[in-house]
Image (cartoon, rainbow, N blue to C red; front, side, top):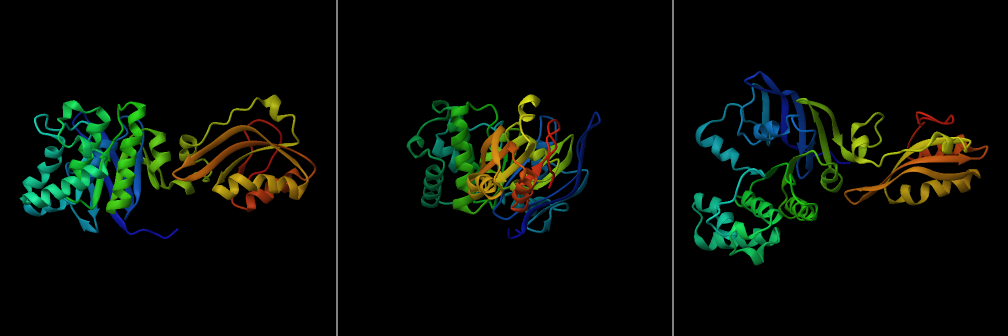
Length: 339
C-alpha cells in the first residue's frame, strides 16, 4: 500500500479539565491525505476532546496539532480563523437554524464569507445533491427526519469547501434505517470532493463500512492504530476482536477433529478458494465449525474456526498461513499451529 502524506498530525497531545479529569494522554496519530480515519472507543475515552482539539476549538495542555504540516499551536486572530476554515466540523449536538430552510442553513456559512448570490446558489445546489436532499431544499428542519437533519448538517459543514471533514459521532442516536444515508454522504464527500475525513464513533459497524485506518482510544490513550485490514491479522489485535465475527465452538465439537485452528482470511480469493485448495492439495477434510464472514468496506473477511481431519492437517494449515492467512490455535481444543 502506498504511504499517504499526513494531512492531520497529532503529536503527544494531552488535555485535562478541572476535577481533575485527564481526557487525553500523549495521543499521537497521523491521518493520511484522502483517507477516512476512525477514532474508536467507548464513551468517556476522549474522542470528542480529540475532535475539538483537531478542529482548533480546544487548546491542548501539551502537544501539537499540525494541519498540512503547519503547527497550529501559535495561531490566533485572523490566521486561526483562516486555518479553522480548512476543517469542516459536523457535530450531532449542533442544531440547524429552525427558522431557515434546508437550503438557507447550507447557505449560511457562504453568506458569512460574503459570496454573491449566484455562487451561493450553485454551491448549495451541489451540496444538497451530494447529501440527497435536493427535493427538501425549501423545507424547514422541523419537517425532516433526524437522519435528514444530520445530512443537512453535513452539507452545511462542507459549504466553505474545507480540505478536512471532522465528524464527531455522526450516527449517534440515529435509527438504524437512517444510519446508512449518513455514512453514504461521508463516503461520497471523501470520494467526490477529495476530502480527508476524520470521524469518531463507538459503533463497530461504522468502522466496518467506512474506515481505511483507525485509532482505538481508551481512557485518553491510543492503545492501537493503523490500517484496518492490516490490524485484523495482528496477534492480539483489539481491532479484530471488535470488528470480526465471534467464534464460539463447544469443546466437544472441536474434539471430533484431528486438528482445529482459527483463521482470518482477507479478500475474495482467500475467502473463496484458499481452504478448498488446501483440502485438495493435502487430502484433508476441512470443516468450518465456528465464526463467520463480514465485510470491511468492499473487502470480504472471514474469521473462522476450522476442524481438520487427515494426516496432513498440520501441513495444510501451514500452507494456508504461508499464503497470507492468519492462523492461530484456539484456547481450548486439539493441538494446532500458530503462524
